[in-house]
Image (cartoon, rainbow, N blue to C red):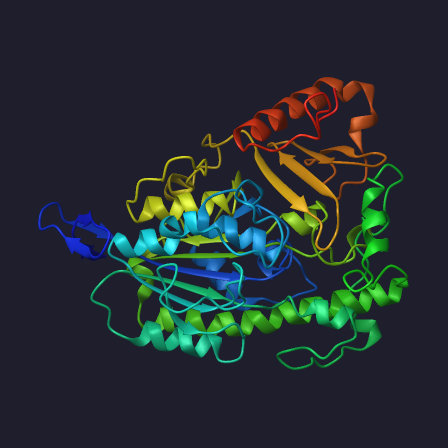
Length: 451
């Protein structure tokens, strides 16, 4: 691994101190946009072929229960790069500028102060589409476009580096499914159509169950541009799923260019590589497209971590991870940076290094949402066995699912007496989390959580 000295922080410059040499790994962070956890062939999905993402999984550790911090690009990415939940810092929606008070402690700035060469290529979206050059600790390699993004990243990795580097590669796809649903041209080129008999089938949870939160249907009715699929036929949904998986394959091919240079330069030996997505897509489950809703397809995302030397290659881990705040904490951990005060992310570094599926981690993770261009707020709390969902209004706004038996979320246990104790425990967990993260209640005598 590259060696770098302990550092002394000052307000104007980075000054190395000559004592106490440390070995710090390079870190490459590859993040796609709107890719659900199941949209990879390495997890057994035969409707999509992702040989390059699969190469990362074969070389690394795959987390099966990783969740986005918020199922919307801006809030999710804000969480990744600030270490805060997006709502507590006023970044619950897209296109909201980051508060000036946070700029000095964003991840790139901390990494730069720790001695890393920090480079950013592709989508930023906190809040501008492209990250401004020399701000937030990063030098810009490439703007927000998938055209030429992999090539710019490859050129960076081809160079000799005298310091450990932190490279972020932010792809836009498979986000182009949004343009497809709206009947628009795809920004990076249209895709060839498969014949109808090659379209994938409908998911087993295609139908919405009768005790699903009714506010989801209400949100669909408010925003036709975001949800033009309300009156899709089953074949419309099959075509949608086919194009979505083709977009995943398209971005997989671009990721392959980066994996190839990692191979050619043998960067595996001294580099941590993290692959994830900012959130998923409904992909027709519960007849839902896009994000915002707290369905599993929307909030459960890929997370693959490869260690230097491909240690623990091919392992799977079931522990719960928040790929926003926990990602921030983990990168700080690898870079030997103390986690700034007031942050609650839990590093997954020790999990990856032990690869012990029985290792204790954290009891729950929480995903929060404000619907894109909508009015509904919601929270999902995932424990090892159950998932508790709460929206701030509407009929059946509470959901409880057994994720071992019902990953498709088709039986709402919150209505059943036998699960009353489980429901109360998950309410208590969410109440604890809301207090910690200063979630504003409706008013003092009306709490968001029932009872």
